[in-house]
Image 1 (tube, rainbow, N blue to C red):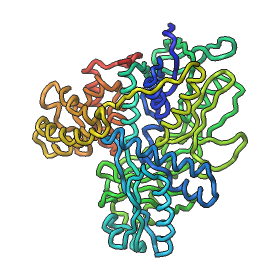
Image 2: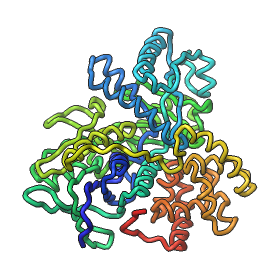
Image 3: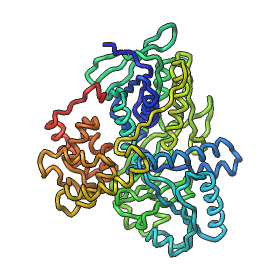
Image 4: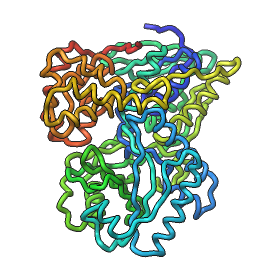
Length: 520
């Protein structure tokens, strides 16, 4: 079955594909996006949840006088501010502390992080400051007392899966056609150039998707699609697995995150507040793309051993959940560089077949990668480059400066509509933090008052929220509901197992299937 010809066909619904789709429809292009499973099912929902310039990259930039590293950090710092402004309910400033053992070390890091602030310029989130021993202990009770001070700086924290989803939902309301559960299995060519993609659905049914330009935005799977388009293409990506543990205890009692600057293999680790628990990560293990989401015993041990060196009493190291994702790192042909030494910059590649591939990058700078790719797409399409039309993200105000005030006005209205329950305030915050100004729409999906009752003490999700996810957010499986529309699966795997059957039953009750076309 053939579909109408699109200006742009994007393969992959992760962060880079979603950002490209959003920017393309803002410029009036007719765009179709094909996703093999659920948007953000892979790397884009498995990040460390930081919007950051990259302190490690800054250190490498200084030591090597490497302009590529400086450019990457500056670019990311600007984009960090962009996302916090555009979706303040999904992204916010997070202070991080780098603990130190002496005045010389503290001065060294204070100088480096001051330069981090300088690079951010007007996009800065707050000035770096010093902490004494008491301040560090107050922020992190249980931290080894050999640390007699620290340096506090600012970065951003965000909900990666929901930001990814909202980019697509917003673009869909502006004309984007989103097709999930649709895996590309081949291409058609006209005069040696790609002219259509062939997809296969869950039941084996095939469809033909003609397009003037085809873009490969499949992240760590990009090499597979490149080879499908050009069998002689050389592999360009090194996949590095990053494993994270979520601890049931809250080691970040002061609300700050902790940067562990030295590990046995030269990495940095983060300890971050995460829905009242603690996120510990990340590892850096080269692996095949097919193994990118597998958590190994070795990586779990690695993380817990480093944690024990910093928090020696070990009383709050019980693991509630463990998960991993792959980073797509670009390497030159024949390169044997380790993943920790590769710059996570991006590249827009065009193969002889005409396939454009988005390679490398990271979540914070996915919009920059998308805009670079869009420039090439528009060159291919010909004609003048159209101006971008305003397109506020769903859940945000038309004027981004008004989003926060409107969210503040929404909070008391939610409290009036939610059931009188010990989790009432937490539930209101959860709805705002997930849906922004659409939070009241979630409540209106309750078929009866009981469907607003929280289902879990870990995260106050409710049946009405699931109904909204199914009706408005393309959720078709319990994993969609528990892993990406909410983050329960990343917080507590036992609690997720308890609610999985309940979620599946509601999907059946709602008549949810896996529809091919999700255009709105």
